Image (spheres, helix red, strand yellow):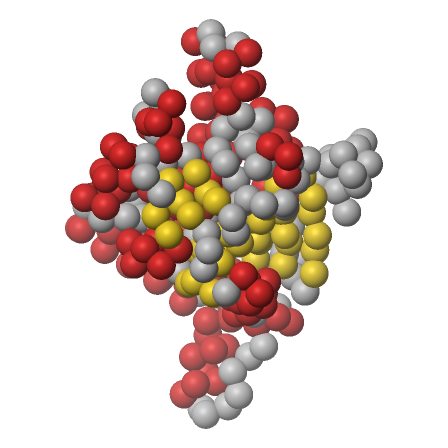
Length: 268
């Protein structure tokens, strides 16, 4: 299934596959290392907007085709029109797409292979969860071509400790998957041969949970992490009150207290 229906399977630059309540969006510009062109970002945004209202989808996977996950923005496209208006529009578009990932009710998992650089590294950081093959390399490498990775910094600094983030941003050096896991950029490192299985297991684990409280919990996570401590507790309390009004929560607590089997959230 293709996200851009007018293209053939060979030409589609974004692919979508739905299976077992998991939607996988695959960046499909392998000859460009899946660089984020304005067209590709537009197609991703269209799919994210659709997924936001699709209750049949419980988890989303972002993947890349070919040799890389994503090599960042399409620098040739940027250089073709470097006017302030064009660059402003491009980064506004990218920022909206990145924020949409956190606003989706479903958890979003990055399936990372090859390299994830600049805005590709940003995409990994912006996803809720990430699993990477053990040979993946990550970098905020824009500085090496004279372009400080300002927008990737927003996502990266919300994942990594300050000193490690600053080193990546100032040097543009690559880090390996084990280091990325230690820094907190990704959740898990597996062999390339086991990558699909690991992603499927993680997606399946979150997809089987109740969508109402997964959505509420994800919304709370991103709200409170930007708040001060007092405001975070107030927001968390409001969410807990709302969560307790959801039938799934009451059913789950009742089952626990009465030593019954827990409800199957996949049937909700």
